[in-house]
Length: 252
Image (tube, rainbow, N blue to C red; front, side, top):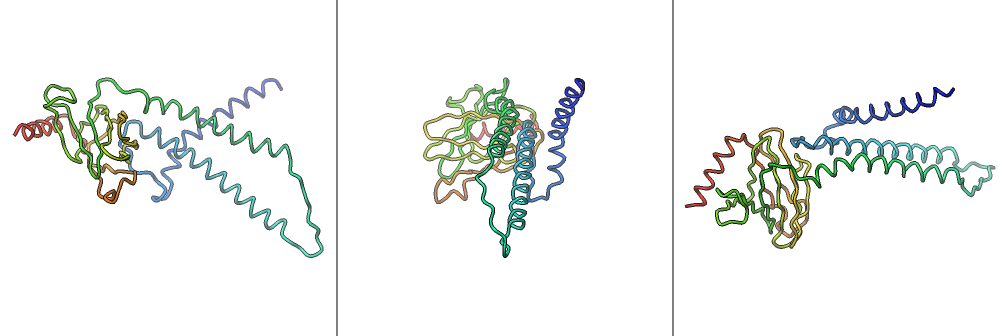
């Protein structure tokens, strides 16, 4: 009997790992209106995996609770000649439905901690740096000029146009001129508030070239609906050509 317990633990751990690995496959089976936008970020799959894992856990609990509610409504419905049964609850059940959600929350926190540290705390080395300043109702995007430094007279400035090369990390220094805005790139799994008087740094890295939208996800005034920009991810050669063109326009 002593050898059964370790084997059982191994089976439970293995089933948990397989369940987590199966989350992306289950997500692909969802109807289109439950799927997330296309993922083009290097860390996007980690965020998607956590999102769908939480969705399946909470969705399963919701279905179970609603099924039990319907069962109890039917099972203990009013009947002629039947006296109601009064109960003062069960300490055992109270402990169970307190401990189980707490354990689930701890597991989710441990799973997400590593991804949070990688995405939010550790800025990659060798990254390209840009400055994004939100204002009502546009995004001002500043690139380092020929000297390679931000905050100097030769900086390049574009309006609502963010360009960067594929395969290279991009660090965004986020500011706001007026009110709180929210820099939202759905396909990159990035959403970060731009707060007046505060500099917030985020990073991302694209896995392929393409064009996507920058949205403001914070109601920032009457013109909020038109506060959007565009992301263009290019090959390194195309990006250098675009940067040279912007430098010429800036000089003229």
